[in-house]
Amino acid sequence: MAVAAALEALQAGASCPICLDYLRDPVTIECGHNFCRSCIQRSWEETQDRLPCPVCRHQCREWHFRSNAQLGKMSEIAKLLHITRSKRKRQEESRLCERHSQVLTLFCEEDLEVLCPLCAQHPAHQGHHVRPTEEAASHHRKRLSSDIASLKKQVAEMEKVKATQDRKPLELREKMETQRQKIFSEFEHLNQILEREQEAVLSRLADQQKEIQQKINTNLASFSDYISTLKSLQREVAEKSVMSEVKLLADIKSVYKRHEALKTPALYSFQLRREGCSLPPQYSALQKIKQKFTEDVTLDPETAHPNLLVSEDKKSVTFVKKKQRLHPNPKRFTCDLIVLGSEGFASGRHYWEVQVDDKPEWTVGVCKDSLSRKGKRHLAGQDRRWTIRLRDGDYVAEGSAPVTLQLTEKPRRIGIYLDYELGEISFYSLNERSHLHTFTDKFSEILKPYFCIAKDSKPLNICAVSDDE
Image 1 (spheres, rainbow, N blue to C red):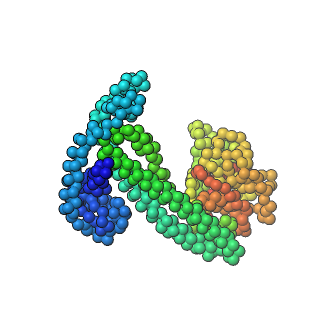
Image 2 (cartoon, rainbow, N blue to C red; image 1 turned 180 degrees about the vertical axis):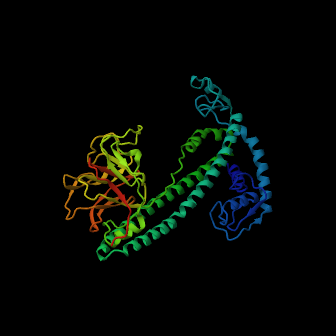
Image 3 (cartoon, rainbow, N blue to C red; image 1 turned 90 degrees about the vertical axis):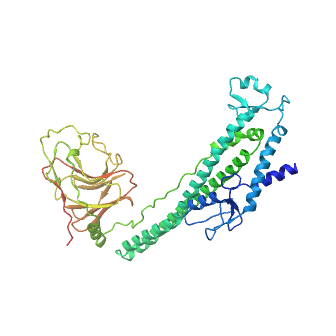
């Protein structure tokens, strides 16, 4: 047993940790580990400017290794001893069947079990592919060799993925810093009343960073564990591949099961939630919104009810008593006097203005593009609309629940501001630059400008946004 152990130790010492074969033209690197010259060269070419030891991960300072002729001779001796010993041990290591005390000379490919001749005659193995252990071992050695290459490739790929994840904390810090600067810039336009809000926003931002950092750390740990598992399985497969036929096949089923059960960790990617001032911007901030986020909104005639006439420039809509003859269109509203804007918004910040003048009834705002075209009288909270409505002299904000607005002056022009990421839709009366109402929600699909009028002859106009006096 001592001799056998010594021979196995000699074979292990004469093997390359990368290709797992006997060393060819062996070289020694800075940390003292030995490899085939071609293997370490390929390994370092794949790592670009880094020179890690594949065994201990020591970072070598320069591309330099020493030839080890003595180790090369030892490798050749170990190879010869292995060939001689394999022939001699082929019969010595033959195991006996525990049930029948006969030599285990057969292997069932369906059940992946070593059998004696009597076991092979059992009904449980009838019709199965049973062949000699020598033939089966040769077949599975080839499979294991293929698995070694596959595992090596997986390790390399996972290390590259992990290297990408290693850069995520820096990416996170850079994006957080960019967003901080953006927040500071916005807060410069507000007065001291907004300072408390600024502190709250930065606190949420810090919590978000902490949360994402924790998820990145967890993800990195899962990749490290996965790579460690792959390496462990790689070593086990390498050990199995040099065992005798019976030893190799005795536990081959569990090896395959563990390999098949491996599950690559999911790659975690983060996206920052936009943080900003949650108070409705007014006065100087409203002017800034006009300058930066004004949209050229137009009406979409294909959505207009047949009793609505959209102007040629698509900026005005008027009720007409005679229903127009139009081609059927699934986008068209057929019950309520509604028309939508042509523009759809799935991100960003957008502002437009609507001239309502002294129309007796109107509804303006934003809705989901999926708003039902056929339903009669959309109720608040259904189909998700966020609008301001004038009806019977009352101004009502219609969202998840209607809110009656107490206004000191009748608005003649309405400003509408959508902040998609922040989840806010704000309405302003441009008469006195006053804030009417802000809806807060979470948006996940395309939103469109919404217009609904009553059966009067006065038009509803999308007006050009101009600087306030």
